[in-house]
Amino acid sequence: MHWTNRIAAGVLSLSLGLCTLAAVGQNAPGNSKSNAASSSEQDWWKNAILYEIYPRSFQDSNGDGVGDLNGITQRLDYLKQLGVDAIWLSPCYPSPQADFGYDISDYENIDPQYGTLADFDRLVAEAKKRNIRIIMDMVMNHSSDEHKWFKESRSSRTNPYRDWYVWHDGKGETATDKGQPPNNWQSDFGGSAWEWDETTRQYYYHKFYVKQPDFNWNNPKVHEAFKDIIAFWLKRGVAGFRFDAITTLFEDPSLADEDYLKDKDGKTVMMPDGTPKTDGLKTEFLPGVHTVMAEMRAYADSFSSGRFPGARVLIGETYMPNIADLAKEYGSPEHPEFQLPMDTQILEINKMDAGLFRAKLIDAEEHLDGHTPLLVFDNHDNPRLDQRYGDGVHNTDIQRAISTVLFASRGVSLFYYGDEIGMKTTDPARREDVKDPVGKVAWPIFKGRDGERTPMQWDATENAGFSKAASTWLPVPPTYTTVNAKAEEGNPDSLFTWYRSLIRLKKTNPSIVEGSEAILDPDNPDVLSWMRKGPGHSAVVVSVNFKPEPRTVSLSVPGVGGTLKTLIKTPGATDPTSLTSIPLGPFGVYIGELQP
Image (cartoon, rainbow, N blue to C red; front, top):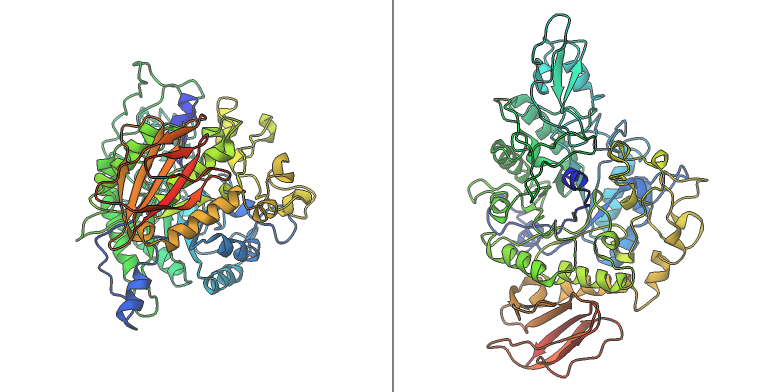
């Protein structure tokens, strides 16, 4: 949800989600079948492979040009082959689709264009047969303005649902004049965050789109309503939730104006509509979020025994300004919050820089109080990896390098559909082709998020095997004839094969599964190297060249010796003769195990 800073700056920022997990605070009771079974159920997510699916774009099963739940069910064997442990579904609840599902009108149903609750139950059941879990998107900051609660809220000032949302008088309002908005707070979609409602003659607050009014989290009834929603989906067998825009739940009760954001040169940052951009500090990161998430975590944990074995995972869209604040998102042992707050400290790099990547790995390893780190690379709100990192010549090798950081560093791995085949960002060419509401507002400075949401490219048949419709909700990119899953599955040197090999290594090599992480060759400006070492197991060394020119790296691993056995290397690369001479091609990767 947080893509507005890059709009204002004219730079598109990075945002996947390699999930962080808590090493403490697992206090919910486990299944009593056996201690081993209990531990396995509770800890299923700790080395998991998570895969984000944008349902509209994954697979159309009924020929209407829009992806659906039955389409996802049809592709479960592909996900099992890839090695996926859990699927994160972006919202598939009933919605007017003003923001393509992030404007929810009913939290306890499925939008008809995606299917039915029976279709959802079938997806859960079929996924379970393949040991794949389902994670839902949970949007607690706002609803659709077409939700029954908001319709009641805006019907009168005395309605019981009035204080479920944030309402306020305007400045200088009279019986005949609405006055001005209560303050200068801005919507992340542009313009004022306050919308005048003529029926009750007050403004309502919307951090995001005008059709997404914010809930009032100072109202205990809102808390209880969302516990009921969480229970509804947990009872249907979901494995957890990813909490959207979670840092924006609360606003400064004083309604004080925000300061205007300055760039590095001290100039005021401007929004696409030409207005100054505020810093958001009165509408984000307020401490009440910790209380809410500790409450929701405790409630979700209560489902971790008896009829509902296994920990339910809470993933946070946590865009923290620094690593210390991110560490707080795990909560405390007494009051745990997220198991997996997303670590976005790597978010603004957007270039192949070994030193910057190294610094973020060190941050995550040394400053998260022992929690497993989660690095964010890609998702539905950000251009795909090709646009942010590619050079047009070595794109596949660059994606091999980035995916190695994702899967071979310590942490749970989360990636976005199509990453595994190298799908390209395909922006609309004309404003009239834009579907994303923010793209329509910000064109041409920002072309919206359609480019990273195009249909999955399954094969070289019409519509890339995504749909049999005459036209699809977004056009299938022309790259589908060569960039598609079927072509890559049969190619031993493909990106798909690389992903699958890394995932298998992550799941089977003991040092990758449970080992510690240590940076090697820390002063090398071009090559990022690290070691994974599990207790009683052979050390694994990883080297990634961040340059388009070949490099040779010499590594020293104190106290660890032995013969170097190649586990994974860039296709066509030469095996090293020793740890002290590892050849790396342009953006080349080497992973080897030191055997006694």
